[in-house]
Length: 380
Image 1 (cartoon, one colour):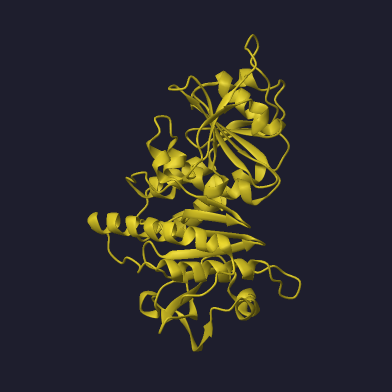
Image 2 (cartoon, rainbow, N blue to C red; image 1 turned 90 degrees about the horizontal axis):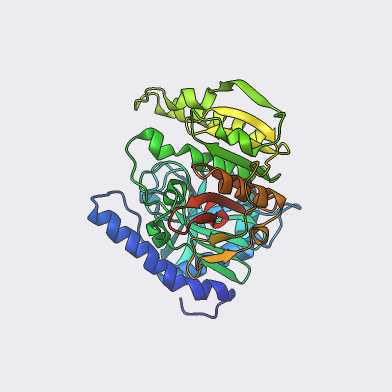
């Protein structure tokens, strides 16, 4: 499989991605995990990335392809749709069939035989740590793997946008003020039960970003009304009593028999909350997952000072923390969220831009300032 690269970024990142997957596999094996996927070689990774990238730039009947490629054999896939005649890993041919396999959770299976890469069929079931590439936008491919707990969003490994490459740095989880949401996105948090595994904040983040209208969610301590000092009065849309649909679901007893129904119910509640962020202004939720208000305008707390700087981080290799003016982090929505956390230091703010950028604002005791965690590369 020695040939000239058709997409230079694929060649640049392939060996590093192989190392990352091998490291995760070795760690999972050491921890007693089973049903582990085979790891593709660097040259195979390069071939799959190149195919995915060129697929992303094509169009089929006026639509850009949305496709997921997973490296696994048919024997690892449960009950797949097996093609009688395998399809070469060819962008033109795969673009033709992409519309039939673009639904969430469907993966086209890629394998290699006699040094030839091909697509053998489609499956909903893939093994742990399976190498997956998602194509959802022109020029954008995301390398990810199925989480070891097999639930929720996949863990991102690398994001390639044209000639720009971002490799997720999972060692960011070791930073002293790393929020639990970031730990979950990096697949490093321990899970004590189904509620923790599903991680509602993660689901909310993905859903808020997906509606592409931008939005702000302010997460405040339950039992305290101090947050009201940092929003304009009178409140536009206060909820009385607090809406507890999501909270009630989170407190339900969950067993293996009703887990799927419970998870679907949680997803519906998440969509309701996330949809409200599309309204101009911020929504306010407490850490019991109760909705307190929506469409509210953030203001500086009376007698408080204006925020002057934030420490910005992004969990990618080479993404060193930088102290910047908060206005550099984004528009008015980001600036007001940073000010809110500056005034309400036990709060957290999730902020999505219309262009897909996503930032988590928290107060850092170590740095004694607001931290802005750019995590959009983890939510794709």
